[in-house]
Length: 228
Ligand SMILES: Nc1ncnc2c1ncn2[C@@H]1O[C@H](COP(=O)(O)OP(=O)(O)OP(=O)(O)O)[C@@H](O)[C@H]1O
Image 1: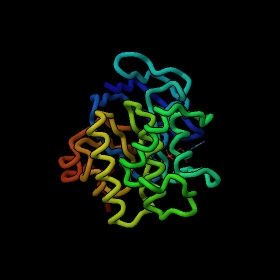
Image 2: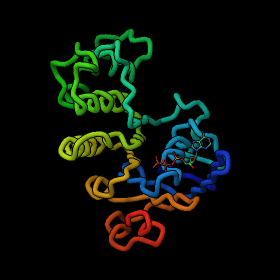
Image 3: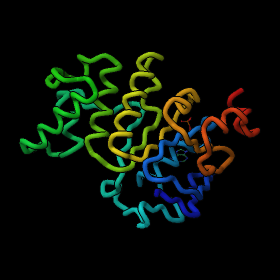
């Protein structure tokens, strides 16, 4: 269980409150208007955004150090290093120093095969398509094998068919690993596709997860205004 207990975040004039739990292994969409605080919420869980209150995983408060948290996060811009090969970009998820044991090298190859990039290990990011770029970033996030996976609109720049492929891949991998997924998206179809629960972030509150279908079929006023 990921538990946010009386969490409050303040950034300049912006405030956000959150008090809810996410069951282990749940797949949760995070939706809401632009600027409502979706990225901020993920940043607090990842340890990059200061907050009051407690965030706990399986009953224990998360450590202060973001690197020590049971969390891996994938942002929209993918952050691949242009001078490193695909292999090394993924290997960074395991070892920042890139000194890998044979077992770890095999793990990197497995992760790349998993996202459909076997044989592309030695390419540089500039030699990849947009979809392949996203796959490398996803492999790097997932190879960390952290039990909480946070995705912040990672596929927003992809066309609809590629995005659907990547979402299906995410759903397949998190189901296999049992990871707890929180995924920010502006496209409610993404939420419907792979997240049975949804956290609505609006008007200073990150609401407890609700059934995605139920929420989107009967949206409260703040969500209706956003959906248009
Ligand atoms: N470092 C910062 N200092 C002060 N305010 C910030 C900082 N970062 C973000 N904010 C403000 O916090 C609020 C929430 O931003 P956040 O990026 O979390 O929203 P969001 O819901 O993810 O938006 P979007 O959908 O547009 O990406 C915004 O009002 C933003 O201007």
